[in-house]
Length: 316
Figure 1 (cartoon, rainbow, N blue to C red):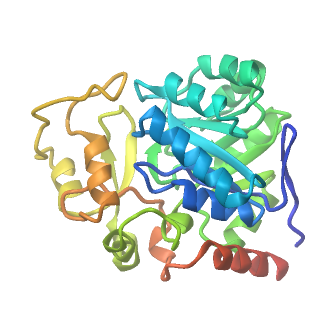
Figure 2 (tube, one colour):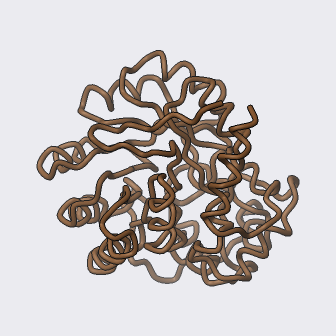
């Protein structure tokens, strides 16, 4: 099978792979730049960053790529500072803005004002059509196999063909892809490209602590659970002591609040829980995961991940 290029507006990715924007601070400049240098699309996870930190990460990524390659951001619509984050990124002239954990009409005005491609994450035909009508350059169709916050309990293999038929803009598939065979299957189902999170979370360039990366390698299929996030969505995570407490509704409640979300159940502080995991605390941190992370058995450099994906696809 020959890999197609991925066209999003005026952007052309030689390899139709988008690296998932994984927060908090897993997807920073180093990872995004490494993916962009391989011909894919690298995303910096903006959620949880200050505006100045985001500016710095975008500039570092541009420096690492020599000004070439495609660099974007991913931001949670549920974040109180969502509009400020995407405006900051647009002012820094990122190539695209990916937005999930909610839907915002405001982002399309930001895209038009700054000439930045807007790519919402959707999980239904209805939302894909609305995004197209509002001016989206592409949509990411995300199935239940994805990691982090989930907008559906339906498989990507079920919703992808429906969304592809419903819109004329590129549809990027997300959820469950960890190797070239998975990528090829989603492309054959009509996707213009594939977003991969778990495979890049378990990369050398991922900004997660070594203890977190080793935790990924030790997990099994039975360790994949869904928890109720204070954001208002289900979240896919690895079963650890903190996730077990959430499932039992016995997790410690926050004693203070930074008001980082527009709406929050305050069942626990998700920003702090994800930060603890990113820093290597796999006991009291929340470790988000895709449904197939357990299949990953090596921490690899991004260059090798791309080489293996291409090799797998070439055999199909």
